[in-house]
Image 1 (cartoon, rainbow, N blue to C red):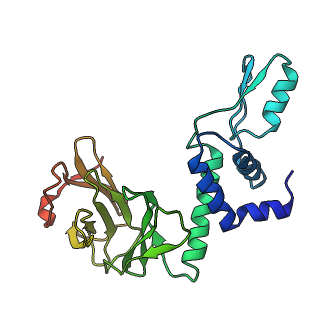
Image 2: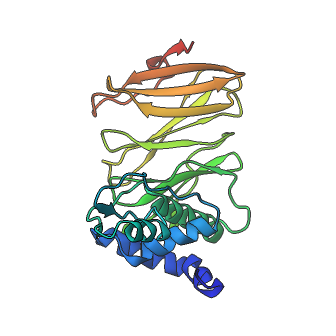
Image 3: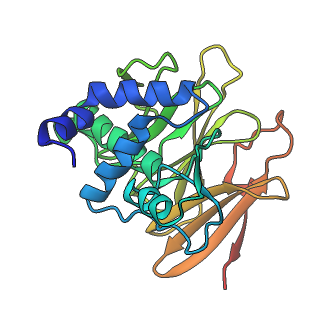
Length: 261
């Protein structure tokens, strides 16, 4: 069991920042992740259970609570404990850490109902954590520098007339791509030229017409950029070629459309 004061201290933003920084520097798990797994259990996250047959080696992973290996080692006197060397990036402890850091970002950076919806946060080719947020009908770009400081920066607005959640991604050429439903109908598409010294955002291409409920954006295996839109319970997909880094598309006519069955 952990005391209330310890849990509160670990959940504090400055403690999370230090733990995250240390985790990124090490190739082995440490006691901090074990503590976070126990916290995850106390907070209602269900840890995994060991398989019934483990052999003579108990491979301890931090996404199991400490009761599991202790129980197995007591039941099998000839067993021994193996500590992992490589990090498992998708284990529950890291998921919890990322969730708490994201929540702290929202509570500390946007602390007065400043934003309405945001894209998923990604680590870009610049090494920064970045996302796009909608403030009313406007879009801004938000990022945290790769030096690890807890301060977040935000750009001036680069889009207006937006409704719904924006989608933000970095394409294979290193440029940023953003789409979002428009208040006037259709989908707005913006991109930022990351090869230009001023990193300019380019005005939107309007794709389609009519009210759009939700959108998604992806790079396909064939090298195309595909946008999927939900419109009154009917999904459709628009796509364009994205194989040549020297080609940019300034007209919605460059997008082709198909309905998804």
